[in-house]
Image (cartoon, rainbow, N blue to C red; front, side, top):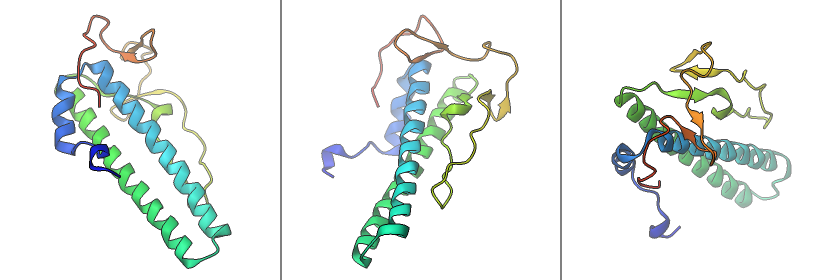
Length: 156
């Protein structure tokens, strides 16, 4: 990977999100969760291949290196989500998370566990209040917590 393609540091990410509208902060969290989900699925497939079809030790070590790198990226993305949550809460807002956006854990055998119910979760507590605490969906598919906010900001 070239130096130009390296992601920004966690500290720089934390500083950059301070300028973002809440809708963009939530969109970034959703994007990160989607990436985490794909990495976990990829790792499950790689583990399955290593277990069932890997022919040589060198191939096995190479694939295990990729799995380890993916796990490091998942950790980094999870840290970024925690920064996004802290930023939202630092603005005096509730962190709102949809169950279906949470990454699903993949068992060692590569199977997917049963999905959790798709109720809204606010700070770890199920919400029964309907849409009152949820951001609205804008016409471009991004979450919108304030209809009159600026769309300016840093794209992360």
